[in-house]
Amino acid sequence: MIARISIALVALGCVLFGFSFAVPSLLGGRNAWTENDAAELVDAQTSVHALRSEAAADFQKRHGENSAASQQIAARLEAAESRYKHLNANLDAARNKGQSTALILRWSGAVAALVGFVLLAVSRQRDGESRPREL
Image 1 (cartoon, one colour):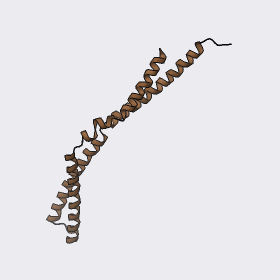
Image 2 (cartoon, one colour):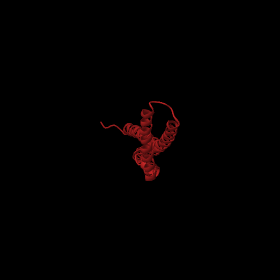
Image 3 (tube, one colour):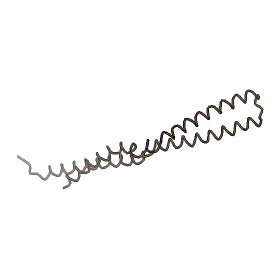
Image 4 (cartoon, one colour):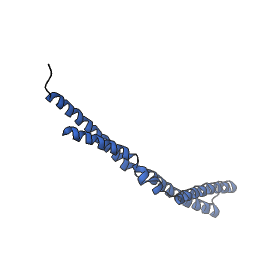
């Protein structure tokens, strides 16, 4: 009886461990991040880059003096950076979606297999002790 349970635990552990590698692609990735999101992120990166260049050129042109135009560029840059950070956070969330579930499955599978192996070793040892010894 213990041998059957131990074999079942080893098999369950192997299945859980193997399935854990498929979980992130099933739950996250392309399901959580679309091509439209990617295009928005590229647009936000481009805007930030262009506004930083514009701010640097304005700074050199005005020799560091603060003007209304400089403040307007700074406000647009801040809004563009905020949009970029938000989209980048969404990308990171999409990348990490399903990782915690996969980790739980992976560790659960490893523990189940380990317990199964230990039980199998114990049951085989008991079977060896219960058999009569040959002379």
